[in-house]
Amino acid sequence: MKIIWTFTLLMIPDVVISMNVTGYPGGKGMIKCTYQKKFTQNTKYFCRGKMPKTPLIGWCSDLIKTKEKDKWFDSGRFSLYDDTTAAVFNVTIRNLSEQDSGTYQCAVDIRNFEDSYTEVNITVGVLSAISVTGYSGGGVSITCRYDRKYTDKVKYFSDCCEKSISLSAAAGASVNISCKYPQSHSADVKFVCRRSGSDLCAEETSVEESRRWSAEGQIQLYDDREQQLLTGTISHVTRQHSAEYWCGVQSDQGHKSFITRVLISVTGSDDFLTHIHQNEVTASFHSADHSVS
Image (cartoon, rainbow, N blue to C red):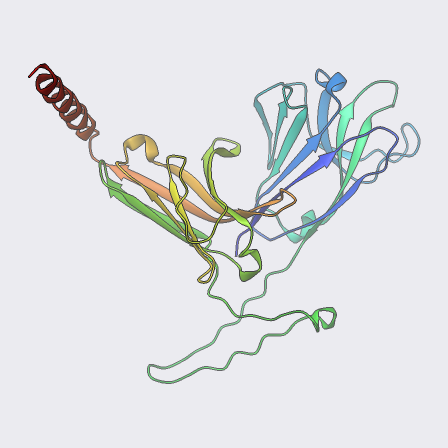
């Protein structure tokens, strides 16, 4: 299961703030760090290591650092976007591995060794796989092991979740998206995001209630919490809908998990849009004729 997580941190000078988060191998992570408005023009960076206790001693190692404002800046597996209007900078990490587990800092470069830091403790968990062979008409028995500290936790078995889905449709048709999610996220808000470059969620449509279609957005969403299934429909697709999308969930605290990648490819011509426009004009013309009568 490939999951992308996102969380928000508030950077306040002289206050120790720390966040513990968990990611998964092969997944992606988005970190949101909020800073004080007076630092909008300062350099922002993300580094690995502990916060320095004294100048020039124990500096954490910079992973990405930029003066760029209001646009994405890329450096290897890392991307940073400084939103000066919201006083927030986002850091994206791609292709997570176990080696990424450790302590990091969201930081604002101030001056004279007075940088503002927010600690981020990342743990990249190990996803184990079990291979089971069965035969038509028969049955299988699966043994699942867990850590003793989870003895009192509820256990469940689920067919969740696909890492990636590829869908294709002709221009003018509809595309139906189906994404399973873990039972533990049944009560959470569900969403579908369209990716644009380094921005994992350039366009977002969400649904907050079970078994009720979302009323807004280009993608109509339906969340069946009993089946742990999120369904999305895009009508009258055009070639502009060809893109990478993500199904995911959002907790009450605002943390996001990007669970399934959806690749949509639209083929053919967008000429159907001309026919739709002509029909609308004709209908309007007939309506005007009736009004004159």
